[in-house]
Length: 129
Image (cartoon, rainbow, N blue to C red; front, side, top):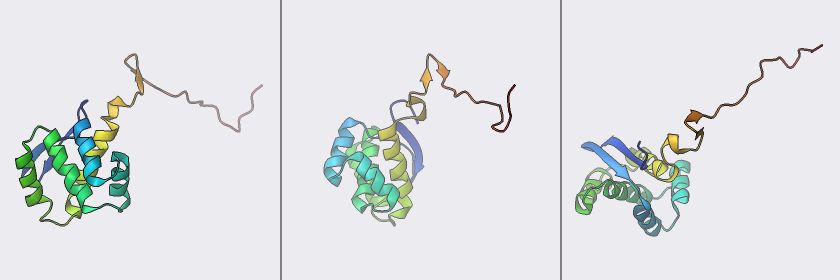
């Protein structure tokens, strides 16, 4: 994963970059008649539609700088001609990175140092004088 919310995966017949930028997310929303988090929830809960899987992967390839015609050919060959479950995890990963970003973008770092919690080492059963 990278800071631009792209992800590189070994998929189908090679290694590909997938990225759902704003334009691809908007098209995904239109094609699937649902927002990105609704689609992500469907992919995770088992309530997905086959269009959820195909569109996430196709648009992810396009967002990763692949020509749309080549992306469509790959999706037809490696998604639409295969059982949906083979590509479900790929669609989940691509969409997760798109909507949540890379792990280091979560705001837990401030001024270059990781956020830490203070932890007490005193036992709850200890008494103090």
